[in-house]
Image 1 (tube, helix red, strand yellow):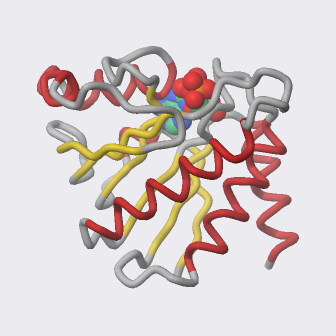
Image 2: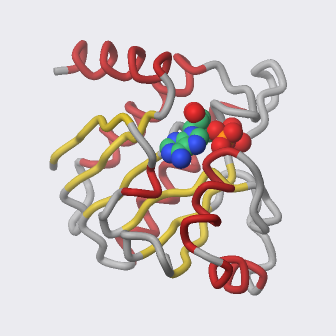
Length: 169
Ligand code: ADP
């Protein structure tokens, strides 16, 4: 299993699947969700409309249309409400359910954005710890996935991930 850290735009990544930090309507939004829909083209929204939304912590898969990857896994992160509203478990579920779906589709590579750390306001360091810990734990049981990448977009997340991953290694 290879675990990578990449700084840049997730929409440019040519892997089996990228993960979208979507909202529960799955009908597009701002941030990484908006960027993915813009880069994929309007057909992605047409497919997403048929999915009837997605509950927080769960994940659904679509085609990727004009993106360089093959699939998009849409997962809905929790909105940060101070930490006593099951946010940590829900964020963990996003990573777990996305990996489960990728495995079910026999995909070999997956890229995660920093789910919930944008407009959903999850504290970045806590979110990174959950992301890394969940992926590391789950990765021991994966059969098809060979490469998992954390795609960071802002400098703060980049520094946090660099430090946490270095500490683990
Ligand atoms: P959420 O609603 O889950 O907080 P956001 O899209 O607002 O989702 O932010 C999630 C993370 O995605 C943030 O850390 C943000 O910096 C990052 N992000 C925004 N655009 C992109 C992009 N094009 N590629 C990768 N990450 C991105």
